[in-house]
Image (cartoon, rainbow, N blue to C red; front, side, top):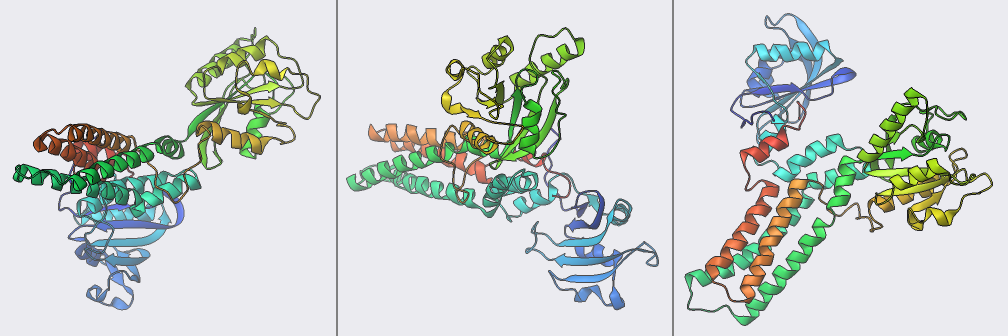
Length: 467
């Protein structure tokens, strides 16, 4: 991990749009000298004074070189004055023509005027340091950019809006109320806590522990929506794996042939299945073969199956099970898997009862990859298996997807459990206060109220330059 840095008073700049051909590129400048730097390089139409530029309005003009005669590009510029900007500092944006050369030339011009290149995530880090957003919201910025499905995007946007942060603040308020009562005991040890207040504390902390457990239970769904699931399609040769891949992708990605062993290498593609980012891996058919190249493909297929978080196993419903099928079925024992009984358009000769020795009936589905039947049912089954038949969290509800959030909430909850045990047996208020403060510290790590350079470094080093 790169060495962490705190933002200095330098004025920084970076291209905030993806590199390459495009209609527009956006160059962002942030820092105390952002406005004065813009005055040096931007000439408004009609030679009007830049001092008259109002915040949050676009102005048309030209970016000119150091001698103020060479026009680099026709642009639109906007000022966003502190504190009403993304970073909380003075920010200027130059909206120029896209491509490689024009943005690069403008950026180099800014560097010549003393602007420093922005580091990865530095704009968002400055926003956090200047109180424009908390740490959970800052993390959501990267999640919005990297979202792979509409479901993952919705969750990232909810976190960016502060839904998770609000929930954490609610938790902290309950703990703070209890801490106030306990610390009053430290200051006035001769006065016992009123029995009614005592019961209220027990009830509110117990309810809070239940709420924390409820939030923790959403982590698996959040992790899946954010990071996706590597899924291997396995089966013996000519069972329909490539056809199934094409059906799920809704395009001809894999070669389909009646000749067994056509797929020698693996094919990997991303697809959105019921809002879940799935990385599908179509593997070579599993069978004993004398062909050296096919043997390598089988070894690779086994490796991909071992690495996969989910397996889609296929058997041919139009033929009795053979040794190759049993090899496939043995690979899904005690694994998160679904079984597709393929070729349902043909006369069925398979013994389904035998299949249920390897996988539960409710994790099987009949499909015809050739005709496309059963594909929607397979998609539903994939979601059910991944979420273990739990009712999906509503898209408006907050869920957690970051491991550090999960660990922090678990630690906060465990401290509250210890508090309740000690409180009920009459431990000293000094001891009780320690557990409550520890819980507050853990909750504060999520929003950044209590954090370390190491945590900040790990979070912002994952950002791209320009964010």
